[in-house]
Length: 296
Image (cartoon, rainbow, N blue to C red; front, side, top):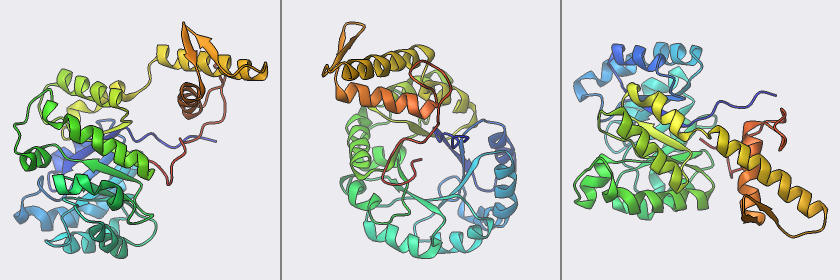
């Protein structure tokens, strides 16, 4: 059985910019998002909505997960949805979510079969993340913003992103506790090296997915979020050693001088299972990491 396509990279694409649409198709990003909020000026939203059905069909043919980010229902989000749902997006993201009621209202419009990803862009939203993502069983992930969050915090945006350190950590914990995937905030500077470094920092916190705002960053971010050969090899050794120890009646094992107990074994087992390989490195059954609902 083939494994589902990973959803490590979530690319925001201007809604009415057809050149950007084509660039996105060739970026290699896992999820392509037609962005109808900040990236689409109000005067162009009608054009962007009209493009949605053919655009989604083209993106889907390229093998991407097709998504759209709509405006809040309190503004013109209902107009967005009335047009774009005809294109059958796989995922609907909504900007500036700060209340579970916003998610429940969105779910009533989209109906079953469409995954929801609320975007958390304020301190108020951050403090309610758990309740927001639990508001509907259609929520499979949530995404944290960078620019709006920084502005709401009254901080200054920097390449290193220290101003978002607490928010990123708190957001990840809230999403993990709720059983949905946490999508890290985008790196909003142009340099690819910085984007890769920011993705590695996100992965060190525990993130498995990251949003991005330029197609040129997709390959570097995907590499940064993809387990490397040495990490995979060690995970196999951990699983093999721990299972051998347990079979012999021992409570733990030792690998590379480290004591391997249940939490370390479980983390290594998740990685091995997600890659579809046995502890010895032979092909195995591939399956998605377990979560409350399908993960992003």
